[in-house]
Length: 386
Image 1 (cartoon, rainbow, N blue to C red):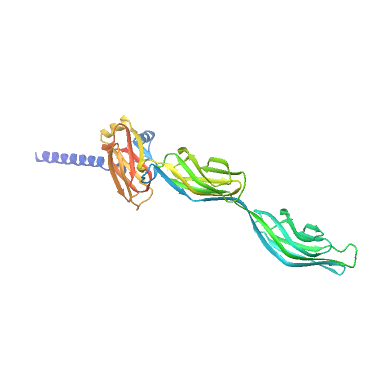
Image 2: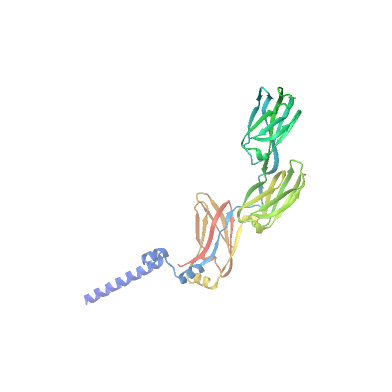
């Protein structure tokens, strides 16, 4: 009789242990349960479908910041655009004496450099003839650029195709044609070289960072000044590689505005390219004003199907997960989920909260109203097994 009672007690104890283990396995997190039961992480197609359907919302939001008005104004640095000439004058010699006759010849070589051949527009040689007989012969890198009788102030345009980075100008004079025993002579003074370079800065890029709440149309405003009189200059403005302006601009100061559709603006970095084909202009007092959501709040709608809501009623949990771009920096905001509010104030790079009681069947919304500026990488609402 005692043996039977002892065997029954042991059976009851085994049953209680088995029930305890079963309850423990059901209560521990799914990933720990999978490891305990030696389940693999591989998913078949049906499993993938179940996981996909459990995601109610997944949104990359971006930068959030509090706003006091329904628009945000971004100041943009000034833009200087020009195509202009920049002359540089170089003194080559104060005086030169050149002779050629029966008893010998004297000539002179002068050296000069051109550091920026690509942007060299022209080069001109200047000098004054104090005394001259015969033909003055000038060569540039071995090529004749002048050969004739010369007097007074002279300027000679040097052919660009003869010019190199390092250059030699050689001055000599022809021999007398009639008096065989005579000589020709030139005295030159103030020998100078003027190099004119075309200096260009025809394109400038400016970047404007928009938060996720700045989702409306924009207006680009700027003052344009003409620094040098010209005609027919063309200004083009590109927004995120799309041409939004292409017009001739007069050489008078004027205030201009350019309407930009919200479809042409993006959350994050927006690139503005300013371009001219000629002239010398300054764009100043540039600003971009963008329509924004009230208070800087980000509002997102999402739907909950009958099956998804049924899972919640049967005990599954709805969880809100927010991933931030940075940690150690304070992130503070109020969340409105279907007209029920709660807040977070964290320095972590993640925020999680059970929101099962906030979810309803059909149309839902979540709104984040920031109290300071921070960046949300991803916001997710999903249903997880309890």
